[in-house]
Length: 576
Image (cartoon, rainbow, N blue to C red):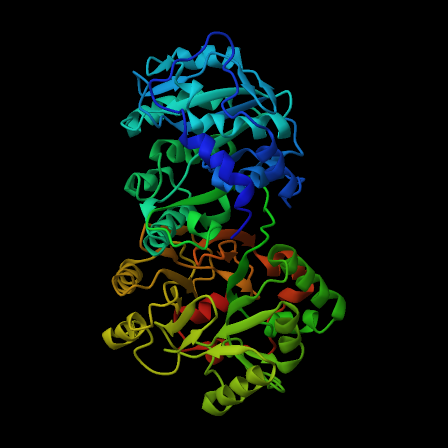
């Protein structure tokens, strides 16, 4: 049971005397809740501290059972001064005669008065889809938040907007156009939304995960595929938040909490409600209380990088740069090439060798817990060298996944496979129906992910084959597909059933072509078993950390004859 007692009284207030026909008094709305103590308790218990970065939006619950989540989210943003706060709430009792309603009266709360922003309200009322309403006298989607607003954002004026359940996407677009000019640098948008409703916890978690996949993408249009109330109580509020944040601030959500009402009590519940806390910021946000993993793309420490990485200062600079992004969380990479105790003096540009030192030292310092060996370079020096590399990795405490392997990584299962190879023909389209069926047969007790080596070099979007493979894996229950090999980072796309990152591009790899880029994929696992994804662009770490004129000299003795017969990939390395 998590802090249940202080909020039981508030829950009782929420469920009593809040009927849709309750009359609104004249003047300012009086306090909706009669006592301040439960709010003060939630505020006093929060361990959240103000973030130094700019926060442009929050999504919080309005069930006061989860008052700790509301307080924690508001505390994160409380280090900034906001002149205006826009609250987007469901019209729970369908009291509005128009698609949207706005409050034109100030609010009294047990934590102090919260005035409205009359000038902004007048602008919103110019939209014919919006009407003034007294429904806010008893709309807990707004009233549950206002005591926290009074405490954390003193002096801010609110614009309280309620969305009718039957409002339509075209109407949300109209309201977005009206609201967008109001999102100034000192405006905070708070979306008041509870998520999965009326389901047992197990089913609620499944619906929450579908919602989290949609939010990982950050596409407002994807919200249209969610259902009310199985996924959330206001598609319109979520759509508006995503659209406004993307349109005005170019930011996506960071989900910092995913919880269910069952977690507040040991008594089994047949009907639950879920809560997701979202924070919108142009900066990377530290997320605490979750288990995090990162995935990175093509990783190689040899050839042009070897001399630089042999110097402790260069190696430490790389490690520091990466750990600023990961915070030292476990990292999983696609390890291109062969780790050998000693590399040949002149292996040629297309055989990728990494010396045991410093390669294993860097992997350890970056907290690499697993590497995929399912790619087209791990057999460059034959099967004996490949077997030796596996032993070296195991001795270093690093899990390795060869082609076709499935490993239990704790909160998820991970499969690794390559759709191309250099050892024998055909070089491409190697994955078979049997491979796909084996991945689909992974036990369903944990989320199932696949790390695939596939695609065309220097492309940022999947081709027909990659799309078909991802679709087959989705049909078999693989929830996340992560790609490598193209040396160029792609986007994160998703629907309710699957997230796809076609390519993470290069992590650490000695290429300078202008197309080259990389990204880190962060996976955050919440205590209830759900997870959220964030894609962090890296640019080209090799260009950033190691580029210098002397590094560009090609290997000695490289001749056109020495490169013959390697096809397109040989040209790749000649055009670094």
